[in-house]
Amino acid sequence: MVKKRREISVWLVTLLILGLSMTLLMGTMASSAVTVRMWIFPLTADDNKILFDPIIEKFSKQYPDIKVMTDIHPWTNRMEKLVTSIVGGRVPEIAYLNTDTFSGLADGGVLLPLDDYISSESWNDLELGIREGFSWEGHFYVMPMLLVYDTQVYNKDMFKAAGLDPELPPDTWDDLLEYCEKLTIDKNGRHSGEKAYDRSAGVVQWGLTETLQVDFLLTIFDPWLWQAGGSWFNEERTKCLFNSKEGVEALNMVVKLYDNYISPADRGERGVTMFRAERAAIYLFAQQHWIKRMKGEYPDLNFGLGRTLKYRERVGEGNVAGYAIFKDSRNPEAAWKWIEFFTNTENMAKFCITTGFTPPRKSSLEIFLANIEPYMKITVQKLQSESLRVMVHPKQREISEVTIPEIQAAVLHQKSVKQALDDATRKVNEILDDYFAWQK
Image (tube, rainbow, N blue to C red):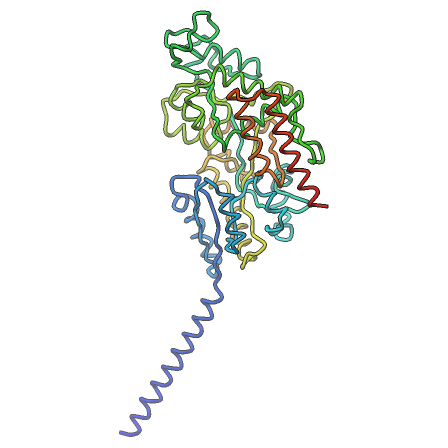
């Protein structure tokens, strides 16, 4: 009996030791697993379900020791919230950034350069302009995922009713003014070029739609400035130049359009809203993912796609978005493994096919073009035949904050065009002077 009890005791001790060993082993395995947290901003109705969950599932099979968590934040005040998290020491491993937002963070030393992470194959798979767009002071900081650019959309039925060729959208500034005159119609059916036209009686159809919404105002002014041959800065980016003759021409054009062909009621919302409601005939700044959504949600809307307008130059507004790793990331190696997997050729192509954006990888673009609707191929073809530009400066946020009110003041006739541009230029140069004095 004693022998049997000893055998049971030994057996229990053995089980306890094995259990403890397994617990320690599981604890070690758990502690070796890392979490990569990524800040994103909504691009679809349900980004996790539609975009990220399927890719994370595949990634987890290849990297079971890395857990990816996506934190979806609203677009409103996104940079302010991100800066607050940085200052508070609560930075995520990864965040979604654009070419117009990354340079300030790179210049501030809070982003991790990706030069030693990106493979030569991936580097060469990106167009030179895209690589340069996410480089600052000789270093590459953001792995691009999508390309955004503006496309002209116009209502073919409205063109036909106004006696315009529905297959021939405006190509120049002069064309646009001529078309808008014929497409802006009062409630009596008179267009704005006729003597009997009575705007005070009510306008039932506007030639053009746009917004004075703060988030979009600079993207409206920029193309006009560049098309006039103007520039924001000198070559060294030390002085603001947009109160030049070209800047005055550009803002005069914008004011003229708002005065005559854009609904005052439309100024508080995105221009695409009026276009979809068939209350305006032309929208110059439709991004390709909006076009994809509009095609699906408004199948009876008969619209065509036009080129970026030309005055002295044919230049459009462009932007690239991608994912950056913070310098204080707890797991930079794991973060890069996720970015590398997430932005590979296949995943980037699927991501962009789903959202309607254009992929920055050459290899992904081939898959994208083979799997999208014909109307979307037209937007890519237009992109390939035109020039895109984007303002990149580490003080861009501050520059925008002092510039936008001046442009609004000119459009609302609270200041003359020249006075508004002079005041904006003076304020921007003060920001630039302080920045470069600090750099020294």
